[in-house]
Picture 1: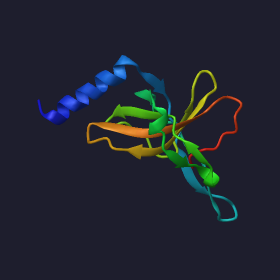
Picture 2 (picture 1 turned 90 degrees about the vertical axis):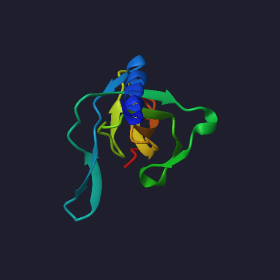
Picture 3 (picture 1 turned 60 degrees about the horizontal axis):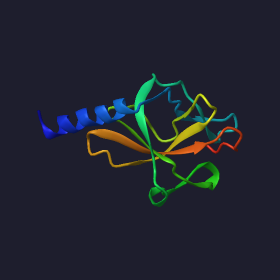
Length: 129
């Protein structure tokens, strides 16, 4: 087994130890009737398993969301190397918390690793796109 294959297996073990399962909803650029562009929810992706890893206070980078709103990233989403996830994807948890993919970090070919911003139920939602 190659080192890359071993790392991919270890990533799956990490995910399976404390998984989150969600249907990610992509944001799709569309044109309005006046010709301006906007982002709307696209067709949901198939359900996927990944790990949400809470970032420490000193690891939380600023991310700029739609309209120039700056927020701190809350989590790393860690998924298999072939996970389908893109900037702007979002999902809502069972408690009404919304999670938005706001950026990416290194995955080294054996994982997909993204920054996630959470919006608690009742807060104003600002999508990543």
